[in-house]
Length: 128
Image (cartoon, rainbow, N blue to C red):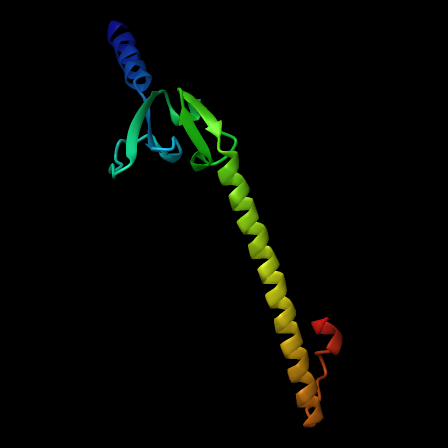
């Protein structure tokens, strides 16, 4: 019985020493967050070691959308805003490219019809 109790205590002592490793840049922005100490430090980065498990640090967004300052996680609103702006610009660009593509295909369809090609399945309304 003493041996079993010793093994259980030993197992708990190993899990109690869990650590989380943060790579943080000079602007306090988190570059990575990992349970493994395997990251290579480059210029402008420093490592911060947190006690606990990754599950102890439940963040509402990706860790790279946070800053770590004064032992606190702070959501990096500027970075998130810039990502949203880029995403919106990307959506607008895709919409514009779709319009151009549809116009090109409609013009090509009209030109082919003028040459005598008959389309049974494709209609002009498919490109509007």
